[in-house]
Amino acid sequence: MLLSLVISAFSTMVPTIITGLLLIDIGLTFGYSVGFTGQIRTLSSIVAVVFALFMGVLCVLFKHKSLLLTGLLFISISALGCGLASNFTMMLISYSLTGLTIAIVVPMTITLVGENFPLEKRANAIGWVVAGMSLSYLIGAPIIGFIAGLGGWRMTFLIFVLPISILSFLLVVIGLPSPSNSRQPMMSKGSYLEGFKEIFSNKSATACLFGIALSAAAWQAILLYSTSFFRQQFRVSTGFATVILAVAALCYTSGSLIGGRFVKRLGGKTLTVLGCFLLGTFIISYTNLPNLGLSLALTCLGTFFAGIRYTAASSLTLEQVPRFRGTMMSIYSAADNMGTAFGAGLGGLVLLLYNYELVGISLGAIGIAAAIIFYILVTDPTRA
Image (cartoon, rainbow, N blue to C red; front, side, top):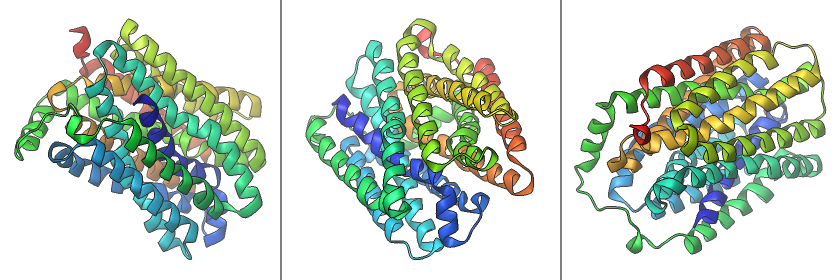
């Protein structure tokens, strides 16, 4: 069961690797700058935000396994569209389907952990699911770089993303309990209204969602723009950039697994605050250093604490409103993608008008603001 969830998380992140690693190449194909081309991620995140809110309804009315399979199906459709896109508009529309995937797959994987694992094992299981996302960078970045070198960025969608999405679909069919055996409680069609009301009337849950959005915005300074930063500021090759991504992915994976181990010991809130604060601090630092080695080291540290932040924040959010975990995690996904869209859009705008240094300062400060919100306004129900 855990393996199928980990591979699902893995497959969801693969398209983001391509846009992070090959954003310059995609822009050159269609004749646009990095700042403009990066908006394909912005649109995808906006789609994810809108659909994630709709998921708050769907996760009450339909079985979570069925929704997860639907989300994985969208990856295949998106991969075909991106690989065959004849113009930027088609690319924009096709890649936006990854927003549907993220809106469905991410909350459903974590929700299924909450439903099928006891409390003492949930954080560790979430750590592995988050690790699955980062392992896609560790394993996928070198493969994508190799494929792109031979056949261009289009082939990375067609011969890597597409097969992985099909494999994920099959593993979920085999590995997860059938809907009839799921522990998901049956609720009335009006239950989702009660779920939304209970979540947004809870001060801690609402603050948690706001903090999630801000920390996701800050994370874009590394996730979306760091590769282009190193390629343009330090003139590193695409091959070397894949090595950077692989090392960063290893740091993120380590952070997510360590976060899963220490949530029970230190608490989800403490780790989330620490992760957000240090992520913001290292974002500001890595973009404002003239030395490649130091900048790379700080990027890796920021990525490590980003992994801790994601696992801890996911665990903390999952327990805010236990009765409506599916709805809570769907809104969590909306908040996360809203922050992603804001961070990608703000970073692109600042990059178009100014430089990478100001991108780091702007998004890094947002990460520190997220830490403050978690510290002041969010409570940890498991520590009450």
